[in-house]
Length: 309
Image 1 (tube, rainbow, N blue to C red):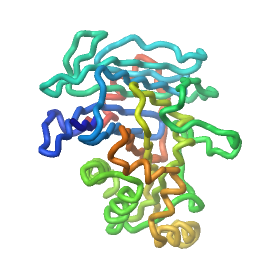
Image 2 (image 1 turned 180 degrees about the vertical axis):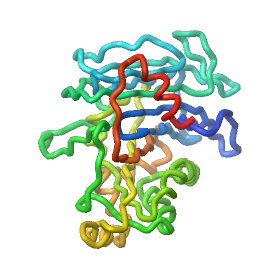
Image 3 (image 1 turned 90 degrees about the horizontal axis):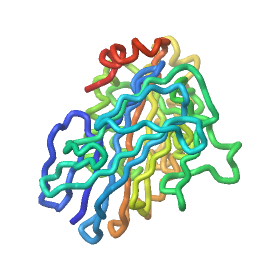
């Protein structure tokens, strides 16, 4: 039987599909000084492979100044090198599609974590994977973009700029070439649609996987054959900025969307090989132009106002 492990915000149910795909919602929110940072994780294999039970899902924050909210509630531990924080769930996929979390004894529909980042940066933590399940930095480490979820931004040199009426079709085409199946593309676009529609013009980009890896490490074991991490940044652009600053981004958006495959670093051949156990993490973040700094006691109330549930 093939499985899809999916982080799913609006859906609070599981269903068995005729195609032998089993949906197991997980949930992951980041809230920080620049707005929600949201990812959805999808582990995909085909009817020709078997996803072993139990599964271990481990996430590592790259920031010492983060304050996670998690459910089921398990111990939040320091990362292996003492910098950052790590959370581990051990789950078993039951016959009724619930997730049985062994540390707490709870049956849940999804795993949840939300993070409030303080404005303090560390060099990160080292959640070592052997061999790595998600992209890691190679010899050209100094050439890899340094993505900081506390201060995300887009520029005309790395983004595409589109009028809002063209954004959804552009996203569908780009996500398709990056290996997302129909349901993944649809849920991605509809999740962000209200945020996108606030703007007349939208600049967007997809992060290189190695840059994203510096902000959040993910380990799923048994280890998948391939992990694809597709993460979008976007923001609205004011009318008075269009002609003066964003001409190159307009031209980039008119190109064939295939160039995003090289930017992100997706191995499309392996990503579309149905004989492999594949994991897709898809997410996004709006780069907002305001920030707040909260004492720890105020974080939970701020999350309640900021997180998208």
